[in-house]
Image 1 (cartoon, rainbow, N blue to C red):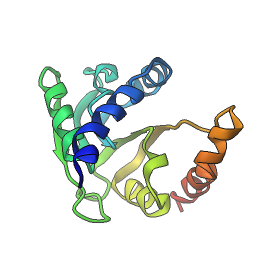
Image 2 (cartoon, rainbow, N blue to C red; image 1 turned 180 degrees about the vertical axis):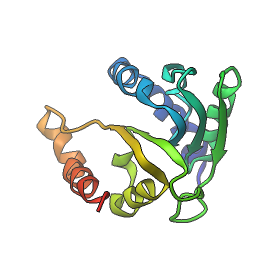
Image 3 (cartoon, one colour; image 1 turned 90 degrees about the vertical axis):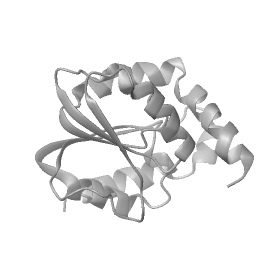
Image 4 (tube, rainbow, N blue to C red; image 1 turned 135 degrees about the horizontal axis):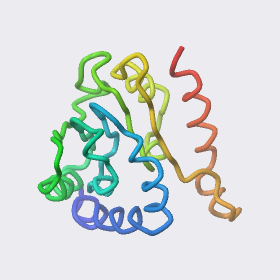
Length: 165
């Protein structure tokens, strides 16, 4: 991993993911999380301010970037609920089957090359009656941006519908 990927890119991602349109959407979806929460792509912890500490017992934060995890660890110091950061040692989420009440995914599915196995893993750890909460960028109104994102909405929506099977 080069210097740019290790030190600069995480700060660029933190800045862009913290822009007002993204923050407004986080304000809408994150407070729905409850119980034991698995946050996929916890990044730098931008969702932390929007968790309702009266509804959340614990958050497991999963992110492949050590630098983003370090930033999130700093952000978690003042929280009123437990946060445990977990790595992704392979293709499997290192949690027990049916062990979480909520899986939260904000602006992350678009970064996963093959969403089908990832969604299956999320389904595996989610308890019966649990909730998968996600928000994504979706199709951009600008055609040039849509071309860059390619079939991302189709890649996400199709497997998401199949994940519960």
